[in-house]
Length: 125
Image (cartoon, rainbow, N blue to C red; front, top):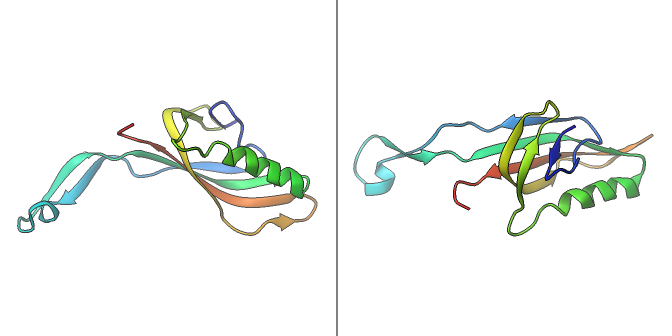
């Protein structure tokens, strides 16, 4: 079971975790002084993890309940907690920063909604 802040927010349906590129944040020196060639590393990239999946519920109201539980974790300032994937890999100090429905609600034997959720480990708290 995957979780954020000890809550199973995405377990109602299939979902997968994707890590953004990791390494150094590199910018052209030209951006700093307007004349010099080359690039400079200005520090590490922030860790960004995206979850894509589908919320699945027995009916419309149950689907809205799942969405409400997710949206309750989108706070300002952002909650900082552990994010755990369904294989048990844990990332500490992650902030849930965005939930985006990725299409219309499908209605059939179950109601479902595709989504994208984004988490960031901010370098500066």
